[in-house]
Length: 407
Image (cartoon, rainbow, N blue to C red; front, side):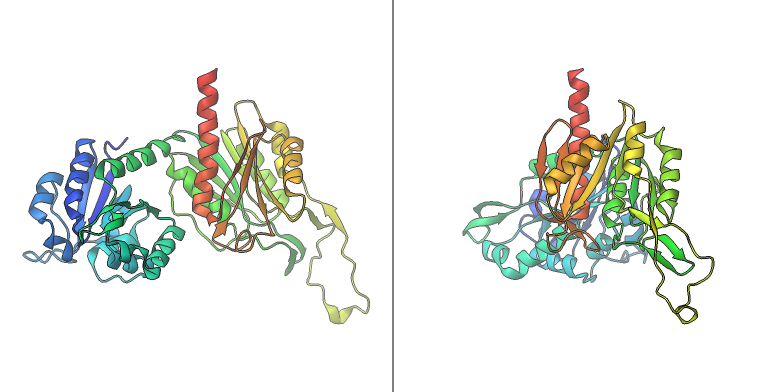
């Protein structure tokens, strides 16, 4: 799974740097192309000569190469990498990553990375348990980084506790599993809807909702990272995609969103309906702005039902297609979600609740339960929406693989 992958290996100034040599050997042996970036303090523990000999590449440490003055572009490294692994990650480096202190080549490359970042902390047990360190690790996790938890054992101080960098073989396996999982959608076509819809009252007013589109965009990015070609039908939002394998179709109203979905649904393998579509639209849209000063009465807004996009596509769905809906509920959550699952002919429905503080509209986190048509339920804690997207796609792809094995 690692053959041909571009891996940036970051090494910082900790005694566990000696383990990075073994990790580098494993990555190179698996066919990965590895670029080592080492902090100045890291060179006190392991020499660049050793790392360069094993990786077959000059080791990068400074912004400029001393003897030639050549500039090392952190931006190019961020674009080149398929994954970035920082092992060991000291308390100092973790703090800099969490707070954007870009004072060395490793941190600037981290801030430029578009790929998944893995962080393997290594430090003494008291540093590991200090509130500032735990807070910084929580920050990194909330940004979407994968934290490879340290093990417990005897440390460099000869104290015993949690803080030993995970063994290179286990870090290698985590990377291998990541790339194996992210190859599950190669060649698949995924349709995602995201954001709100706006239903015009007049040229300057509309009916809408608070959806930011973050959940749908996170799913689109995760599906594209797993090898899928993604068509993202997006209502009006203020965010952009980063993966070139995502085709964005911008729409405004529910009718426009349905039409765009219809055009692409027949060619879709997986459809994930995350958009918060307005249930109703004004029966008529005024051609000019409705002026309060020109009316003595209060206008009455007559509403008509919008098309149900998930139900419409569910009625069109073939047996070889997978369809996922979302249910945002305020009461009777499970019953309402299961009703939508059956009524709209979905394969899965993702339930989230407005009663859960810090999730749903406009936030970076979500807390969901996923129901499948066969009656299985999976519950998850509060996570970044990027991690929720991974959970959703993990369930879909693993179920599809099991289904193929059983046929």
